[in-house]
Image 1 (tube, one colour):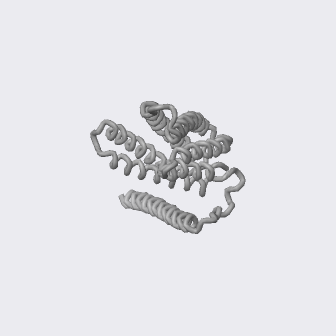
Image 2: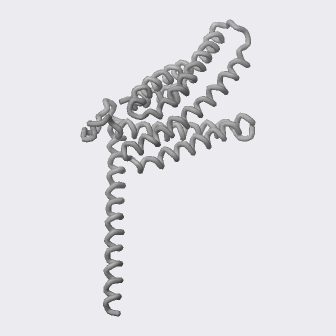
Image 3: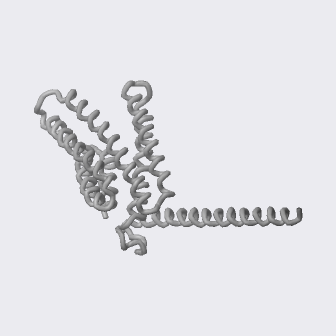
Length: 231
């Protein structure tokens, strides 16, 4: 459907990019995510905005690659100013991309009837915005850069988990009764099973609470009727 590609691209962009050749993984991640969202927009048109943001990120990715290659080859002179412009542009576009993606995911949850998941999307939006506020404070030397990096890592994991939930739960029309897709990675299967168990427990707990409220409401109405008859 597309969420699997988005999940892989996100991991490349925001986790593998922490390696020495992060600029290459980021560019590859942008392309993979863009392809995933192109498939998703057939089901959820609002993801078109995410594609536009990713196309802009792909352009900055090529600029970043050019600057890094020039530095490695020792050509082009001092690239510090150019790199600074590219990095800040990239980071601003990443914020825009996340806002578009998470709002579209919020809409997607509503379309497929997973309204209980909307709160997760809203929470992730707040976490991303907070992370970028701390990012600006770190850039202005108000706080330590390590704090901003740690918060960014946290919200990146939160968004990854949200996308993983989309991959496991949202399917094309007609496949609603298909069993959960198994991954070739044992850890992913264990994580999915634990997540599914918690969700089923939450659904069952909510169902019991609703039935209990209905029962109490019915008993309350019955007691009022009895009191009224006695009068």
